[in-house]
Image (cartoon, rainbow, N blue to C red; front, side, top):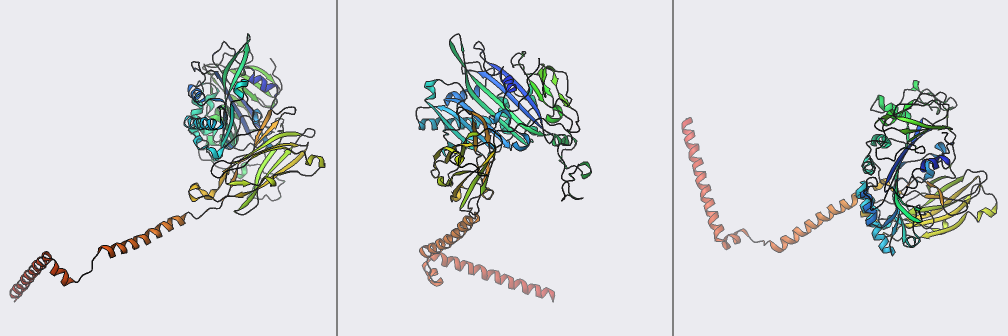
Length: 605
């Protein structure tokens, strides 16, 4: 069996992986499949993409599809769910097109969108809140902070991926929320693994470890739940399909270095190959050359353990099922241990089926000089940054470049801004750099949807459908004002700034509005006018002191009576008696002291 040539973004290899996972026979109530893709990247990096697909229904025994998630979806009337946890930045300039066409990766932090069935917007908002609170508890995340100020209703950017009946589509409400500041950590990975049938104890999920996953240059965890229907004998049978994906880019040199020392130490200057073309390099500085050689690595070294066999609950292996695929150059040798059966070899690709109860490991020896795989460019390069200066106003600039020499790119640009960023729509512009034919200037922005913000109630939503000519760069810019917050609305580390959610770019198909590729820009850090938070403390202390002095003075004037000492004695017989007794006691003590001194003097004589 010869496998087809591996295309990085879309094509026959993707279809090959999804073929046994897409639809399940109506006779099966549940099924489960998993596979792992390993790909070598420039700079001694390795991409590991884990994919787990579970199929089931609300009425099944939940042997594969998790009951906890099914009950949440059923209670909140959620028909389709997409949840993303992402950290780091995908370096498209160096690594090329993103895996799975960017569909499995969200923006920095947490991104959630869902189609909720409801009769009105208010009912949809209530069910959206229920969904956020339930998922927050399930995944140990702060999803309950996705309130109305962080929720938008995209119009052009997203389309349902599952099969929905026409009568249900009319009642579906799309809601989208982001938490760009959310730290993704092991607390989110543990419940993610508990949704799998084998709980990370067997199969390819046994490689997932928090120490390795969150040490990666870039990592993303995603959960996509969609209804999948198939017509059999004239009857449409539908199931819920949950696709869990974990993508990470590991640094081989860094992973191997931790094996020798727990404390990360930089390599010695003698062990580094410096770039002689850098005229500013010297004896005390080195700019190392990349891609000189490929280091040796194995699964057990990169992840700390080999694959612990196949998951017993996975579907029975067939001639089309694949568990592990290694995408490395044909010129580089690959050694595998027992526990896996090779099912085919293609151009720069080798695939294996795992055996049950047997560890499986892949070993790649050293390769010098380094051999790089063909780099497939993404359909669009995107970057975003702030412009301007000062604490009152600012601007945003997005640089969008179409690398194709002969095809234009049509996409939807989505911005979800907090309410304290107040953009000016009349300043929103898209210009070609460098300018070309004037006819393109009018066609860059095809359509705009703008939903203004309401203070402390909702954020700004800006969507623009755009079209970029071949081999061109477009600068998207707009200006905004910065609002002044109440001092109670600032976070504890207010001087750090406020995280702004990444922009979402949905590449559209040439003949329809279906999304074929998704891109997230990096998040931004907005600096707002920040008060001196020590001043409220100083004001409170000063005010309390003044109030205490004033109150004490007024209280003494109202309650205390100033009288003479003799008048006080005549008016109080008890005090008179007490004074007389104390005076008598003093006289007796004085007399005794004088007599004692006299006796002592006589003895001395």
